[in-house]
Image 1 (cartoon, one colour):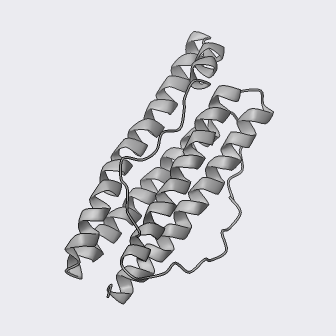
Image 2 (image 1 turned 60 degrees about the vertical axis):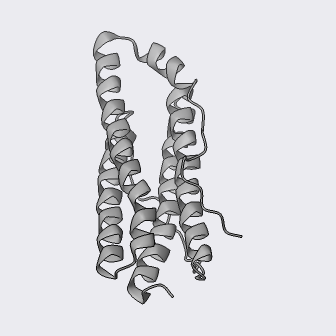
Length: 172
């Protein structure tokens, strides 16, 4: 049986991953309504990634004989005033999630749950990539605005496609 505190943290993280999907859907919708469909597509793919993160946590919990408590997912609370805001909000959000994942990993180790710590190793590595991507998007946006190539960047971002995560948890 999984440590109670770790189970609660994993359940909370499951719901926070779904919140991340909501947040990125809000960003995607913002960009689509502004006619920046490449940026909208970038965040549409992020929505899928965050949903997959939640589903991986759910699968892990089920594999361990636990269940997920479905909690209300709050509405995103970010006020977007210009096209760069979602990019900066996303970086801050990914940094926040990184802290959550590290806490989860530390708690798994403290509970002596080596299997959960190994499972969470993937998320630790994923967060490095998420922060790198968010930082890169800000840098690329700033350069495109300065160079007058925002339309070209938006066109490029239309080509981003979702790919399934490399981590897989067999439930049954």
